[in-house]
Image (cartoon, rainbow, N blue to C red; front, side, top):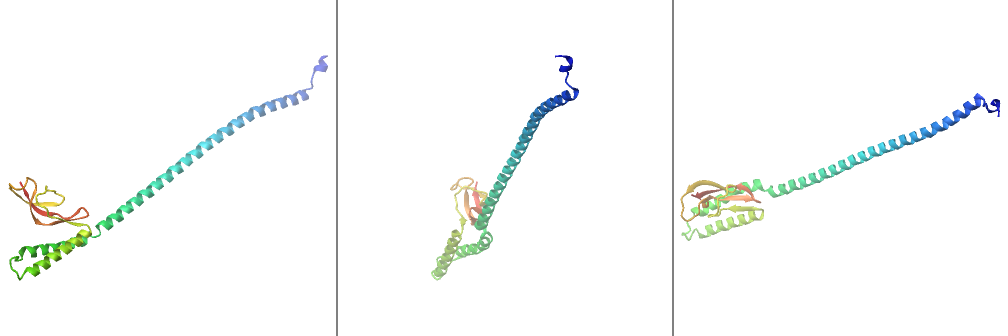
Length: 191
C-alpha cells in the first residue's frame, strides 16, 4: 500500500481517537463513580449505625430512668404508709406515760382501789396492743446492752448485779415505730 492509501484522514482519526479515549474515560470514570458511590454508601451506613446506637442508648437510659423513678416512688409510698402514724403515735405517748404514772402512785394494798387499778391496767394493755398492731414497740428492757439509738443515758451507776454498759433501770419508756425511734428510753446505765 502506498502512503496515500495508508493515510487516514485527520477527521476520521480524530473521531475514532476521541471515541476510544471517551470509552477509556467512561471506563475509568465508571470505576471512580462506583468507588465514590461505595464510599458514600459506607459513610451513610456508618452514620445510620451511629444514629441507631445513640437512639438505642437513649431508649435504654429512658427506660432505666423510668424504672428508677418507679422504684423511688414505690419506696416513698411505702415509707409514707409505714411512718404515717409517726405524729399520731408521738401524741399518744404522753397518755401512755400518764397511765404508767397512775399505776406507779396507786395504792395496790387498798382493796377499794383494786377495781380502778385493774381498769387502768386494762386500758394501758389495750392501748399498747393497738399501738403494737400498727408497728409501735415499747423500749423498756433492763439488763440489755446500752444502745444509743433507743436509749438516752440519764445516769451512770455502780452495780454488781448488772454488767458494765448495760441498762440498769428505765426511768421513762421509749418507743419505736417500725424500727425507727419515736422517743428514746431514759435509762440509768451500769458502770
